[in-house]
Length: 227
Image (cartoon, rainbow, N blue to C red; front, side, top):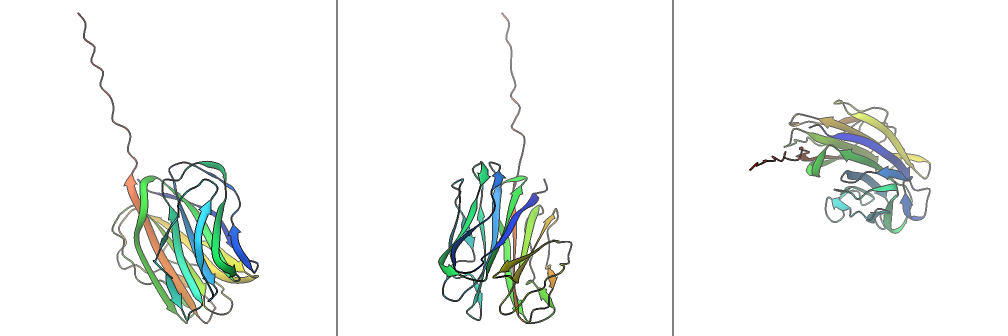
């Protein structure tokens, strides 16, 4: 069964924030939340993600995650089998007061036990910001890609490989990060996702999520014995 992905929202720090929150949304029980984060601050990174439903978020790319030049930190977080909350608020918490940091959150449904399947990072300096080549192992998967600047202003105007471009997020009124997603029903082999880009330096993060398909409960048989 194919997964379904909905963008919850995008946010960015106006400057000097120790945390930043998404707008409230209706969280349905059993789904998975994926949060794509970028922090442009060498003094500290994201310490945790929390929400008002009490879900537990796990970070992919352990420790400092993927850093480039000691200034950018890109990381994916997720909370599987979420509790419901009609006005759920997701909050990104920083280890120190942060400037120039952004995030996007997604709601993923259509399977149980949705967890990461594949992840890669890449960095470069060109008009095409490309992910590293990725290969998934599960046919039904939700793919997420992010491009971020190391220095300067990012203009990510489109994305290829059939991804939906979810736009850019601003930190301190500067476009720092571009987000995209895609749902697939076949295994992806040695794929690369590329953003158009006008920044001098960039980093990318790609991750796929998959899970066991939802199946109908077994039918019960009733035997009636008459005497």
